[in-house]
Length: 158
Image (cartoon, rainbow, N blue to C red; front, top):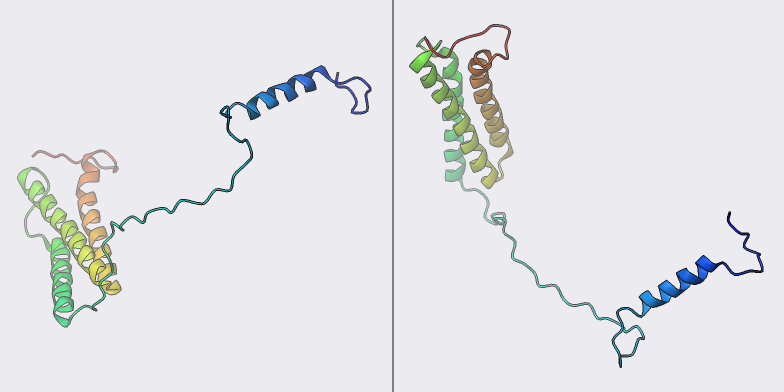
């Protein structure tokens, strides 16, 4: 049972705790040193160089924007033409070719996204991300039924 704080007898555990705390206070002290706390001056932290690429100070030139929009146009044409793929791509090598073309749509999306990010051009960056999503959707439409995710089961081989 705990004793009331107004008890005339000192608690033996309190004495032990005080003794241990006093021992901890002197634990790090070295003989012959003054134990008074000193004022510490903060040490300056050296600045590290920023590993990120700095934002360009010069705005994008007309040539840069034309090249960027040419990439966007090529990516959109490639993504749009994938819906009109002229060959059967149900299985085998034609399927691999179709998936390779779908991967090129994704690569074009990433390529345009990187270029538009460097030029800080938001409209082309949004189009690039949509193009990347379209490439993922094209590939998923062929891969998911073959790995058993869809209700119908398709085959990889003819």
